[in-house]
Image 1 (cartoon, rainbow, N blue to C red):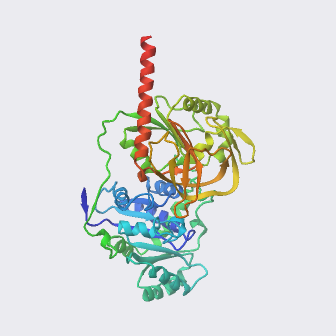
Image 2 (cartoon, rainbow, N blue to C red; image 1 turned 180 degrees about the horizontal axis):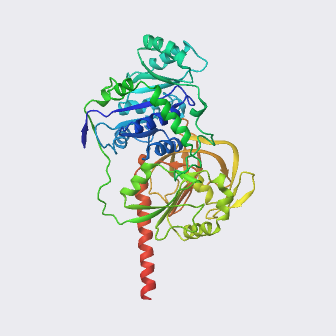
Length: 479
């Protein structure tokens, strides 16, 4: 346990999605890095793509935090897991509107709830295009809900410099908040084209799927337009909240692990890239080592593995290439049917099926490790948080309840019937996910820190597989 009286940091929020949070946050991270500041970043909520932009900008992993997934103690522990010095600035990008949490109606899971738990001051990015004094009424409305006194400053987006200079003093006089700057109307500051959300930066950092010009423009703009003295004053304060004062935080560390090492093959390429950093960390704490591979470009799975993780992503955009890589498809199918422990989420789940429709609707062969066909639904399916429990214990021990989320535009003819999947708040439920003693495959993305035993179970299955392989090898050697 480590006592921490204060951690420099700030949460970037907005009145609604599409307000410019990602543009501002990426620009802020780029500017801070360029200024030589020690900075780390986080994303509020279940999101993969925004963290990729953070990671590409800083060159270090961005991690997710969510007060619905984890309780306050675990959330704070995850937040402080990588603290390197007292001056490191923690930048958190919010999700949706400031107060929008679970089901859009609950405080839990909202950006504001996360700021409350972490004791972070909030900077509100306000889209001001098409407004004048009405911006003040909008800001006052958000102030009225700020029971912890966390809202400390605003940045106006999509506004001219001349109008900002006239409007900013009025905002400060009538709200008491600091106006820290503005983002002008500039096409270079538009986040690159979207598919089900933001464009996915390429995992290897190459130009494809990653617009370096956008990051550069955002960084240069923020560096020029932001009131840095005001920013550092706010980010270095405790926001008037008792939550940061002399609070004791548990720090998560990966120490020596005496558990037998096992190797996990992890899919990561243009088609499969949705991985939570803290999921990998929990597996690493269980003695798991990673071999990243590409279902698109590699011929076979890595040698010496005892498990397989097929993450989510956009395999439907690469259905032809995945189908053409027959040797990889056959290797995965063979090893899963032989009992290789495997977890496949959303896009990875679709890849395990017999067929998948490509962009033109033509069916393409996939691995065939499980039955079913993947096809476009034409709309988002079951968007949001879910809780999951196996109906009959098979992959999981009895009573283990997981938390995750779903967000996909593809459907499947066979979604599985092994688990009960339930929406929080509404209680709506359905069956899904294909499981057996060594396989977990379904649409939900699982957030391991919400139930760390999932990582323990998966790692133990890999150790069991390694023992079986070693025993088989001995039988061959001495037969």
